[in-house]
Each structure stands twice: as C-alpha cells, then as structure tokens.
Length: 51
Image (cartoon, rainbow, N blue to C red):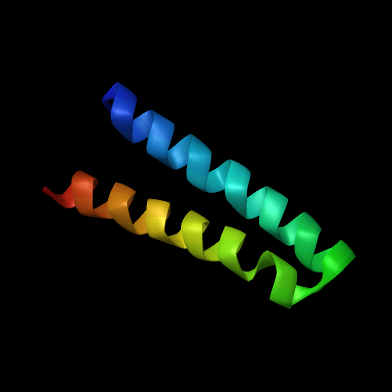
C-alpha cells in the first residue's frame, strides 16, 4: 500500500467518524456533505486499488 492510498483511506475513515458524530449531534442535513466526501474518498481509494 502506497502513501497516497494510506492517506486516502485515513481521510475517509476520519471523515466517516466525524460525519457520524455530526449526524448524532446536529442531524443528517448538516452532516450530509461530510459523509459524501468520505464516501467519495473511499470510492477513489477502491478505484486506485483495482487499477
């Protein structure tokens, strides 16, 4: 696993945790963008792994 892959996966995991916390405190409407960035980073990570 190369450094950019580790960074992508770490950012995706961190944003997912932050997004879940925001959903529990502020609601899904306020945390939607954080969850979408986390899912986009995870999709980029899986795309890079298959390549």
